[in-house]
Amino acid sequence: MAARDDRRAARVRADAPRRAGPRRGRARRRGLLGALQLLGPDGDVLAEATEIGLRKVERADVPVPLTDKIAEVVWDEEPAPAPAGPRDWLLLADRDDALAAAVASALESHGHRVARRELSAEPDAVPGGDAAGVLAVPPPDLVDEQLVRTVAGVARALPDTARLWVATRRALPVEDGEGGEPNQGFVRALTRVLAFERPALRATLVDVDRPADLVDELLGDGAAREVAWRRGVRRVARLARARLPAPEGRPRRVVRRGGAYIITGGYGGIGLVTARLLAERGAGRLVLSGRSGPDADAEKEITRLRESGVDVDVVLGDVAAPGTADRLVAAARDGGKRLCGVVHGAGVLADGLIADLRADDLHRVWAAKVEGARALSAATWDLDLDWFVTHSSAAALLGSPGQAAYAAANAALDALAAYRRAHGRPATTVNWGTWSRVGGAAKLSVAVLDPISPEEGAEALEALLAADRPATGVLRFDPAAAVELFPEIADMPYFAALTEAAAAAAQGAARTTGPASTRSGGSTPPRPAPPSPPASATGSPRCWASPPNGSTRPSRSPTSAWTPWWRCASRAASNTTSA
Image 1 (cartoon, rainbow, N blue to C red):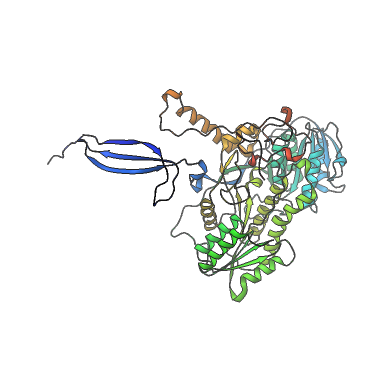
Image 2 (cartoon, rainbow, N blue to C red; image 1 turned 60 degrees about the horizontal axis):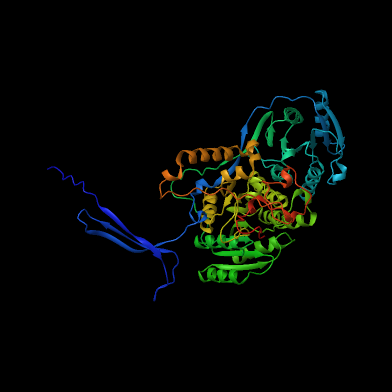
């Protein structure tokens, strides 16, 4: 029996949308309303939908798959660059530093001229001159805040004609199982920040295990800004898309039913999102910590958590202060509960350029982020935790001009996580981008980042814990906007994947976008280009894409006149930003 070939087409009829207004007995709605009918070949109504609501959807409201917003740092093997000609060097190190002495001798044997000075945080201790390269070699006991201030002081004193090198000794976790030196490994964030604040310096971090490799790197004067040598093998750091392992069987549960969990910064927006996730997955007790008590909105959420059957304990105190971490552990384990996991989300912001870095601002940021995390790590070191999470920031992963202290502190969290894992302890660090609706940057419009929603953040955290990822960035990054705002990243191997993605996006747009008269009326409009930074009127916030007077070096103006790149808000109607 032959099948009937009915090629008659159904027709679709849509009424023009009208503005929605209030209706009695219904909630007040805003937007447009329309109607849709599906008609048969004879005009019969096959299906009808009325009062279809239309509303504008922002890019940030459209979820992005997790695999499209996770990133990591990878180390690619590369040969050393060919040696350049002899140059003048200024070597900053302790007088008896063996690494510095060996490097100075080797450079001089290759015809280079080397002057040596003591390494100091005081800018006056760094002489000017005609040195083409300045090498700072921090001794092993120069750590933490003092190391941040020292690198900042050296950078502040240098002219744009010199290239700044910072050499560390196995401070970075490069190979599998390496723990690095958590008190120094965060320096990578400072050189990343300097890449934007002082691009002419070409600030470069070289991490080595023997002097000869450092000499080879200095002689080559290559383009890479973050290099590690291990036993003669040269590796260059790059930012790449992270990948989650393929699922095998049932996904791993990350929350033990009835277990106890600690969350510092626990009644901030992101802390409460984390608390809700743990409660929904079966946590029995949540210990929420903060320096002051929860506000009214947080109290309501805590009440809802308790009504759901979770035991919620609020413990006040600065987690960096002696004894606070021990009190949190005691509260979690009270009554025989097992402490299963820790989330460190406490933090303080204190924005400022490296040129204007103040010791008191740095200390406030460092204490909350770094000393708090280390105190929690020490208090739980011998406990059988399932996981230990640090809420780090994309500022450390990307480099955030105007946020040197914050970037370095978050990089120290990443270094602590690597150290813990190398010593057989669980640790997961997450470099979060901006969040919508919650978090310190929720009300900011960001030029190169779309915010992730709280739902996306919770999904990401659970997936990363289930996969036991050691370090991952979670951010909705716009590479095309980044390259437009900061064209200098095109010359940085660290950002090669981003610049390639931006180029591919531009080629794709060129293929699909023609003259306006030929475009489909229903196509999605391209994202507008990032706004140009405002004019250099006194007091106007600026982005680092446009230094004053077109120079590559910032003026010594007050830091309030500058804005971190991730806070470069859309300023079509206003030239103001909010902190």
